[in-house]
Length: 195
Image (cartoon, rainbow, N blue to C red; front, side):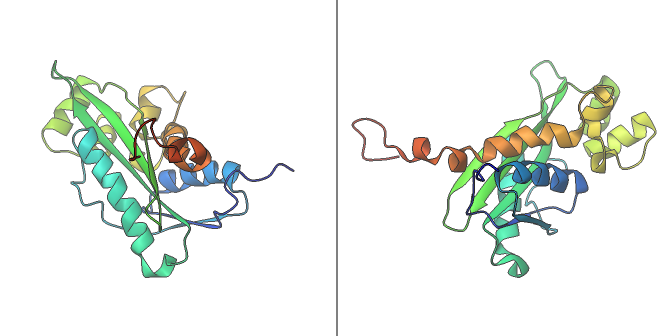
């Protein structure tokens, strides 16, 4: 049996009770720290329910990771994750999705990963622009219930070729890069005293 890539990770906490986000973190952690346990806690993201733009969405993911680690019940967690989905208005007025994941440790190390961008149909974009959260807009247009806790907009818009969980797994993996390849991230730039 191969050695775990992150043997120091024994307990993980996710700053969300959304089953898609939890399952995505579990799937990635199973590959890098198979003996670790993954827990979930409801926390505030510090951003609106529907974040706009990559920056606001990143802030939400970061805050979720921080709040997860700060939760008293998980004071012994080795790493906390925040995952946040958002939308971005393009220059032509169209709207696309975005998503970000942040992994944080108690000693201040962190990593960020982002991806997941698909253009939204005009009807969905109109609802989002008028203040409806993307998940609710997809529910209304697709005549479904609670899509954000299932396949998500991406699952509907790709005819199931990729669902929200599988779309989130690369983001979570990217957020772990500073831990998976720590030697590269700890090197100083040539002729530099700063990282």
